[in-house]
Image (cartoon, rainbow, N blue to C red; front, side, top):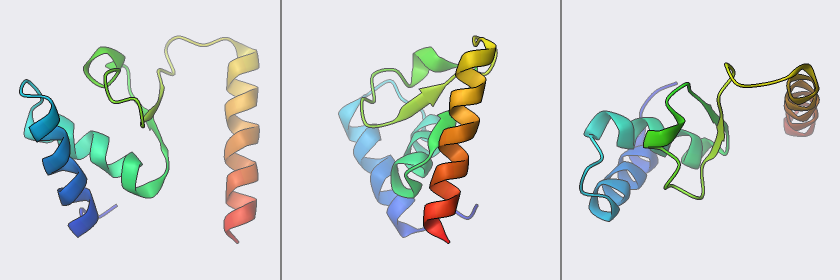
Length: 81
């Protein structure tokens, strides 16, 4: 996925809102905000303060959560077509 103008704008807003966020983390968080996607990361703590970002740590799940995530992704993809 390319970093476009909207991602840069969201990233700059995140940097202004949280002084300790790095540029890399701001871009990582800005991407799912613009794309309306879930951020899949093992590093949940650095992004938990951004309430608009849906987070998922794939290392902390059970089979039911995985099934629900896959079904949700499939439904969203179907709606986009």
